[in-house]
Length: 132
Image (tube, rainbow, N blue to C red):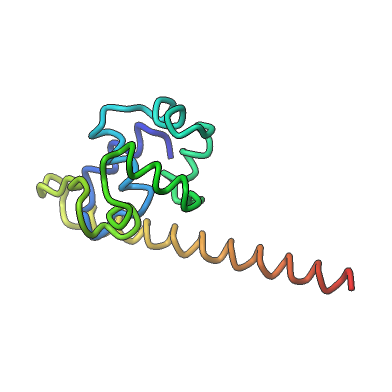
C-alpha cells in the first residue's frame, strides 16, 4: 500500500481497528514527516519503514524505542493503541459498512502475516531436519 493509499485509508477506520503500521503512519503524519524523512532519522532504509507501516515486519526493541521517541508517542501506544499517542480519525465520515470492510481487511492482513511467519518457521524447521 502506498503512502497516499495509507493516508486515504486512515479516514475509514477507528482506533480500535488500527494496526501497528497504521499507528506509525498516523504518528508520522502528525509530526509532518514523510517516509524518507522518518527513515533517515531512524537510520533505516525507507523500504524497512514501508514494511513496518504495511505490517509486513516489526522493528526490533531498540528501533521501536527510537521510533516512539522520534514520533513523540509511547511504545505501548505503538504496539497496542493504548496510552499516550495520536488519535486516528473516526469522525463518522465513512459509512459504517466501509469501516467494517477496512477493519476486516486489516484483520485478514494480520492473519496472512501470521500464516506467512508460521510457514517460514516450518520451512526452516524442515530444512534443519533434512540436514541432520
